[in-house]
Length: 257
Ligand SMILES: NC(=O)C1=CN([C@@H]2O[C@H](COP(=O)(O)OP(=O)(O)OC[C@H]3O[C@@H](n4cnc5c(N)ncnc54)[C@H](O)[C@@H]3O)[C@@H](O)[C@H]2O)C=CC1
Ligand SMILES: CC(=O)C(C)=O
Image (cartoon, rainbow, N blue to C red; front, side, top):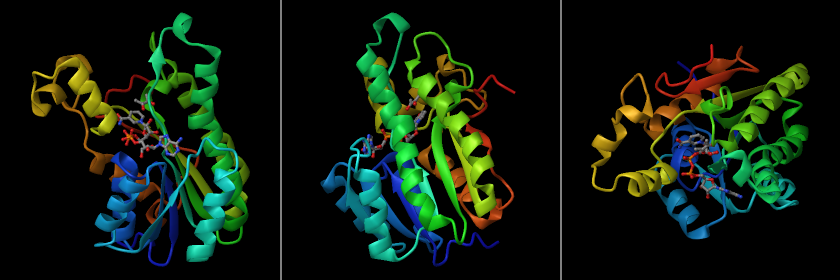
């Protein structure tokens, strides 16, 4: 099977750790030149060193919430690698509270990080993808499809990310640009390990991962590799007829059809 990554260039935001970092590794292993983006240079250097064993990789230190960062990230990528084929809008975090406890500034911060940063990155990337086509992949969360109580503002930002993905796919298909989202359930990463330590430090990871209260039909929290596999596939030539889709990576925990 040919994923078609050879000679392609991918930008992945929030890729110094977690799902973004594993995705970068997989794309590099398949022949893509990968540009990592995150705020902390030390972790980026470490990620670059590790991924460089498998393929071509570099990094840009940037906060995707800063207004001019998207233009700078894309410009520096073009300067470094000469083209752009894949954009993964992965940077994010979780902030979930009941409606009454969410300040207006929390709404603004969350939408800025999870929705508007992806808009700015996609707008900056578009001129470089129009000629040869490409793939844009937005990370969202499965809870955005069926928002439960105490899940604001994150489920709203994520639902907006899904709606944006669908609408963008309609507008950009004519350029051969595919736009998809993956809706994450629970995947082991720094934020989930923190949750484990806060909620049940007395349990081993295996025990915590398998707790009934997570309500995961497959019986455990997923691994970063399992999310990266799907993202890498969706951005590859093997998914050449998939656009506007929202694919759950959640061990079956989502409730929506
Ligand atoms: N791990 C999970 O169970 C879930 C993850 N997600 C989403 O999937 C994506 C990846 O998740 P994880 O790997 O768990 O995340 P993580 O917390 O391990 O890593 C997130 C990455 O985003 C970067 N980042 C955060 N804010 C940034 C900013 N302003 N500018 C640049 N980089 C920034 C962080 O430095 C980090 O590299 C995130 O968008 C997350 O919200 C959604 C639902 C569940
Ligand atoms: C956990 C998380 O990052 C969400 C729901 O966006």
